[in-house]
Amino acid sequence: MTPYAERRARLAARMQPGAVAVLATAPEVLRNGDSDYPYRHDSYFYYLTGFTEPDSVLALVAAQGEQPARAILFCREKHLEREIWEGFRYGPEAAKAEFGVDEAFPIGELDAHMARLLANAPSLYYPLAHGAALDAQVGGWLKAVRAQGRSGVTAPATTHHLLDILDEMRLLKDAHEAGVMGRAAAISAQAHVRAMRASRPGMFEYEIEAELLHEFRRNGAQFPAYTPIVASGANACVLHYNANNRRVLDGELVLIDAGCELDGYASDITRTYPVNGRFSAPQQALYELVLQAQAAAFRAIMPGRPYSAMHDAAVQVLAQGMLDLGLLDKAKYGSVENAIAERAHLQFYMHGTGHWLGMDVHDVGAYRDTTLADKPSRPLAPGMALTVEPGIYVRPAPGVPEQFWNIGIRIEDDVIVREDGCLILSAAAPKAVDEIAALMREA
Ligand code: GLY
Ligand code: MN
Ligand code: MN
Image 1: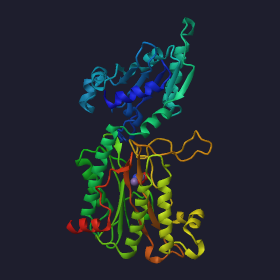
Image 2: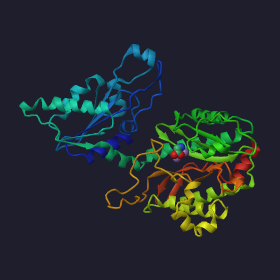
Image 3: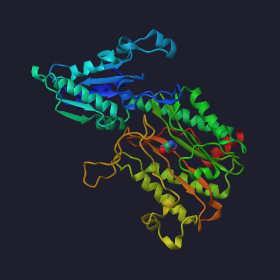
Image 4: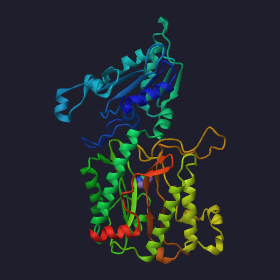
């Protein structure tokens, strides 16, 4: 059984007997003129099909009595002329054989088949209020089924939000996903190594970006998973900087946040390094602090421990460092606990320590257990994938020691929770001070 068929079977087993689920892939999007954005399938749709063509819909009918569950794919028909201009498309017949669905039909027949499939189905699962087009289509199908009421046909009496179920399934990565994510992270790690090696004072940020993109693509990654950040000097203190158009000066740090998407799965790595290969004393002091915070966060990742534990661990280390280095006034705050309680650390560390990672770089899945009244952070479990990305960003401000001004540092790795802790997927990108220095010396 393919991983996709296995996931469809698991979804069908969670549905009401005889119920129907329906899920469309993403639309093509015009960028300008006659030029589309590079096509990217919908992550949920891909999770259940492995099918990457636009104009596709999956319908899944849950088992009922003797009737086994059925998967039905709607896709573009073969079309010689269009294939001459746009390239190969499977067509229903070949798609059925290749993607292991029970039936496949032309997308143009969707409305007719949905009215048939929904007749007498007890309920419908679909992405509720996810897109106006699908909502309207669903309304049309239900109307068509109700129109057959006089012949005794019943329409689904309830609808369920399909994505709630899929989000929880996607949160726990199966072996196939862990394998692809490991390869994506390895390519991205290699790209960071290439970027470090190529860096020289006087280069533009975009020249370094080009090294990353080159390494992604030459290894078969289809896209960057998100717009790469190559931020030198003070730009590193802009969290979502991505203009990448400044010249890097000698003595500055470069913060690169970049990861590729491979076969539908994201990686998300940040490294910060001196463009000339040598950290200054203040740069190194802050860098080692962020590294220590990340080590503490890794130690907090363990099945059964709450997701939030790694953030708390990182904040504890960072806030203590801010007091020790004089970024925060020891006399004013007294203890690290008090500094954190007063949220003083937010001046220099204003983001979370990570997020779920998977097909989407900020992947789906609840962060809190919403079944409990106080909605606590949910416990980690083997198979969850997340980033660990502490940082420190020092903007010039009164009372802040000038030697640290405009230094921005983040160190980000990708991990999968395992029985005994976490497996770091992106470990091949160097981050110890001496490793970085050695790599850049030999470049
Ligand atoms: N690159 C996006 C993030 O780190 O969350
Ligand atoms: Mn991230
Ligand atoms: Mn990132």
